Image (cartoon, rainbow, N blue to C red; front, side, top):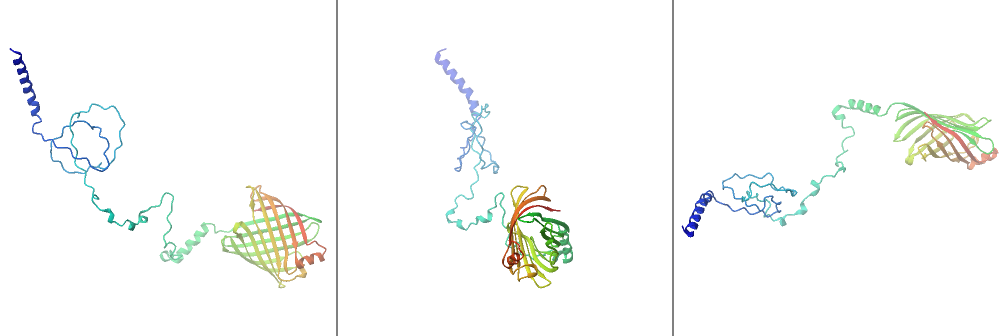
Length: 372
């Protein structure tokens, strides 16, 4: 057999073997892949570059991809296992649904009419203001629902629950020895009350003298106080003088805490003889440490007329100004030292000189302040 005959037989055998393999895919339609959507580029396909044969063209129901529009993060590069679909040409999936806003002309829309405030929400920690109608209702609107009698009892119970019950309080504001030129003296200034936050019975006593001599001046007050404003009481009652001439006064005044923590006590006194006098006291605590406190204090006494029996002239009778430094071992007990200057003015100074007294006196103070 010649070489030409051998080659011809080999080619004929190869053709017969390849015909069945080619016939397996004969007649299968190969649809072209759908074009990629024009919006944002899709993430890299791990099968990119693989030649995947197209699946048979069979009708499939239209359905929305639940992951449509999701941007998948790129996976870290790892050694890829052998892909069982290597060499297959995969066709594109169904086309993404059309954008309903595509093709619309937004240039004709009036963006200035859009109210961003309606959809704005406060950030963390922000509070929206109350509505304009807040607080515009009647002060006791619950009376219309539950009845005035039931709500009256409820309000009284609420007051008792929040501190409207009687208490007793007593304070020695000044209890001191006065060291001065000549004979030393003493002074006391006591006060206390019994009652609740809106109505109280007050007791006050104040006096002074010189050691070894009779009491020069002393008084006792019994007062009824009624709250008229936060931290302020209106007081009215009786004052009885114990030192000197026997004198009784009607009293009306106010006592409370002014701005900047100034404690104020002001009162008018009308005696049974018709003498009208007044007194204004003020003091403030300046805390240096938690226990060391500096207290400036001032007092002014006035008179509407001359009172020769008491050695008081019309106008400003006396002015006292001083400072006390106390140390609170406990809140209820605090010794102090200080200095105070007093002046008699006008007619009162003349009466003092006539008695052989100095109208201006400097006192060095040692005392205690206590309360319970």
